[in-house]
Length: 373
Ligand SMILES: N[C@@H](CCC(=O)N[C@@H](CS)C(=O)NCC(=O)O)C(=O)O
Image 1 (tube, rainbow, N blue to C red):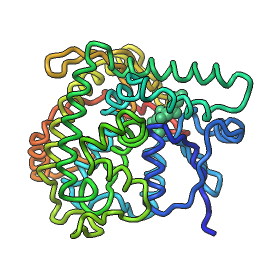
Image 2 (image 1 turned 90 degrees about the horizontal axis):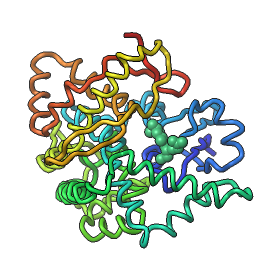
Image 3 (image 1 turned 30 degrees about the horizontal axis):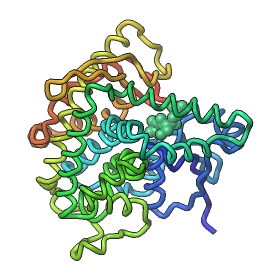
Image 4 (image 1 turned 90 degrees about the vertical axis):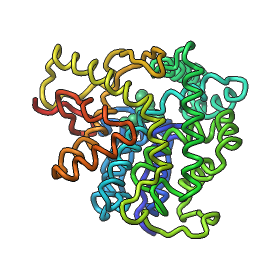
């Protein structure tokens, strides 16, 4: 028997899908336990830093909180099987990772919470069984669901922009559908880090809750197949008769994927700029000590998408992941850097290069922390 990891997660949790798919795809033996399990509170929480999922406990007893950190734990010790060899592909993979984790919260939350007729009993089942069996279970379930409904509003799904959230999502879905005509994963025959980022919103919410699942099955069969594929250990690509087990050759980033990124940029770029301004203002006012844990949510910011005003909470985690994009770009020689700038311009993502925080974020004791100025 190989050593078994324990993944604290929930089937209907967005971020859990990212780590779970990674474990499945890399043949890492694990069992999944709910946070309602006694061991989570007693053994894991004191070492996890925050009560979030996914949190992994290794066979040696190490506790790793956070999906990106769980993936990095395995990537760093196994020759980085999910990092494409070419720099262009690495950039696109890192971009799709941060956009998957932070840039699709509005459609994920909208399609989960604003279609109660189709979704509510399904959701209630999942939220109920993620609570421990105590007399307070029904009230706790209601309170948790109310908190998540409010999170939809915090992430920017205000009533007057629902139509905008839907147009952006359906355009994205259709562009991704066209992309998957060419290959089973984002960059060829195997999943990259970006696939794991993108599965976060596209599995638990958009590819599984009843209303958005039906939408995806009707409008984007290939995207739905990718969601299934990401949850299987094999390549699961019988419909691609010429699929290789590798990333696309010659560092190719297909035009169809650039088209996907252009749509995502319309939302991700202005929100990132506004969130950077909000967090930088907070940093100037508060001057956190090096090593101080970064608050996850750091004040509301306002930005425009297609001439509509959207208000959303600025989240530090977006910038923790975006540092990977910046580090990749900053580390290039001048010539490669201008080629990369051209790729980013093609994706309409140039604005991300200047949306930076005035302090770097690091990780200590399972928390994102502010580093030295
Ligand atoms: N940065 C973390 C975020 C994890 C996260 O926020 N998970 C949600 C569930 S999808 C959670 O645990 N929420 C409970 C809470 O915030 O108290 C990651 O990527 O793993």
